[in-house]
Length: 419
Image 1 (cartoon, rainbow, N blue to C red):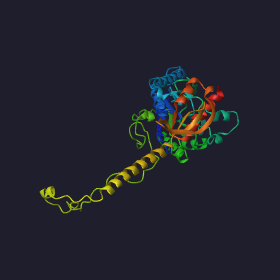
Image 2 (tube, rainbow, N blue to C red; image 1 turned 120 degrees about the vertical axis):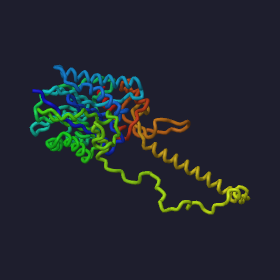
Image 3 (cartoon, rainbow, N blue to C red; image 1 turned 180 degrees about the vertical axis):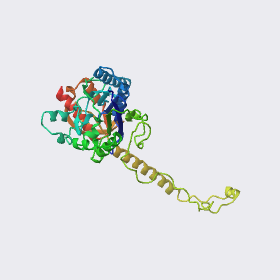
Image 4 (cartoon, rainbow, N blue to C red; image 1 turned 45 degrees about the vertical axis):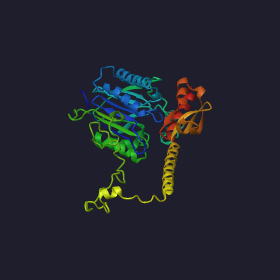
């Protein structure tokens, strides 16, 4: 007996991040979530590149289902390597990948990173994948609990990802499907915030569409500061409606991040849960209709009279010039002050005396003027890192925030410990 998938996919930029670095895909044979690693260069490009490569799996697989999953993950990694080779400025980009390939009777799963896959069966929710993170290693050793991991300062430290350089092997396994199963894939914006009990409570109700939307909404209401991507699929003996098409969401969808739900076939929600922006629209107010024509013209005179009329003495010329110069200087000062203030809210990771450091300011200099200074110098020694990692740090790694910069430093600290 062949079974079918009824699925839904939702991706939201969230309430804090400026861009969505998650990508997802749901189709009749394939479910996948990829999350661009925080702190890396262009995580959105890495996740969308991986999903575009993985979505080619969306057809009925042959007997070697795990071989097909592994091959697709490796091809996604190779494609990331190609884009980095084409543009060295992308060096450091990486993404997680969680893939579930369905053949009508079983799922073959491939996993790398900290996105997750769950199985909701007969009222019980079970996590299928194992996180490749620093905090997960602490949980495995019994040093912290799952609840403590949610607030651990190094909870964003990924130990394995697709980056086109290290060519990590994914975890591979398969499990049989049963009618009534509900499979849930998500980025850590959801599972890093919601408890197992809360996810089970939502997954136990409604259609896949309802569950996916409620999981995103619950994640944001619970305080998630990340992008949130949720894919929910039901295993059924009944084929889905003909209007159920494959769904491409998040960065891979190449749609406006704040499109309303239902916009296009992607099903991406963008900023659905942000609410409306308040304030004016920036438009110039129209002139009221009851203002008579010519109301702003006062005492018109004959053109010829004006042409030959004697000019009035030019009084206080020096004062007017002084005021013009003072105004221009004031504007320039305000612009420079605003620019300097903005630059001091920027961070990047670079080298300071042979160590990995977080810099405040811009990764650039003007003649005779430095636009950045060391904000925090870590204990990570460049000489203990690989040549590639050390060169990447020397060139400077842009960060969207101080938290992202600290996550990047933590990543190199873990690599130093592992070396």
